[in-house]
Image 1 (cartoon, rainbow, N blue to C red):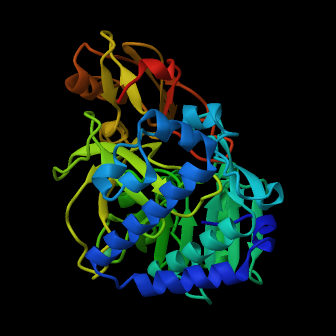
Image 2 (cartoon, rainbow, N blue to C red):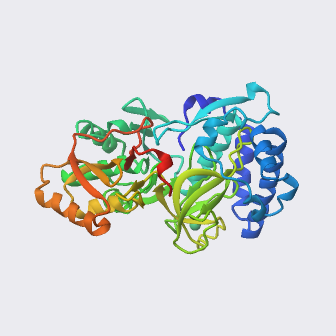
Length: 443
Ligand SMILES: [Zn+2]
């Protein structure tokens, strides 16, 4: 995760080193030892939350839970979920009382759902810890110190360089047709071995290279996709264009879950030292069936100044009980399946997950540059499309036909042609904009 230089300056080096060395050592722990460690950390967190965080004192008392009663994960599951709405309403009482005010720092989520969430972190410690995880991420994805790197993220300047010109950062806001030729020129001059990017930005570059029959950049060894869901068509396009090995990284500012794919598998390894991750089904219970999709709920083991306990991140994931062949015993998540907000409502108010719909569009036509679904009326979905000059009525009809095969008459689709798809404040792409009130939409 790239860090803001302002925060890097605040970094606490002993915390960084301690975290890094602990991650190196615990990487080799057995499954049982990792589980024991997590339970021990959870118990410590619950005890701290009950005695120092007014919100949890109230919630535990209301639910008749005492920290001493939590002796297993089954006990832990009695604690009610924390949601983004609850965080907004209880921000002050979620703050731990046993730390002086000057040790806190305000922090925000990127606001990819349109509303940034404000919370608190511990000055110096948070960024040092995240930096240690960043170092581990570099090691897992084989980023060598001397590698020339291309980074595409949401930033103000079109270009920024670092590490004596060996890292080129490009703004995801500028990945559009007028700027792409210059960006490609810079990329070719750099010849990066390593790319870290939002998948939507890199796919747009790949699409441009393919459509205009341009020679791609050689020598890319490793590509890390961050911050957005990587759709299968994007993975194929990126791999075919840049030829490097593709890794995925999953994390959030609230720091409740940290996932990385490894060289052996495209499944996410969830770091148990970072957070305790649960996959919750519609019945509110843990999912235990292979390939079943559930809501990702995370408990941060890093941030005790503002504890996120059983926090509904707003993402969906696919369960697997498999273990990776790389020898690491971290639990795996087969896929991140998109956000819980990616749920549309049918004419009869039934919820429908839009997962896989992007692939349906890309299977129907190659003549679109980008697209985004939008809903403000139950039963109707709008598909905003930035088309290429080759887009014809045939493409239009095929999208409609494939959509109807999937949804029948439960959802109508309207195609609209637009000049561009706006990005979020953090420069990320969103696949679906849901304007219906969130209380109507239950996963
Ligand atoms: Zn592995």
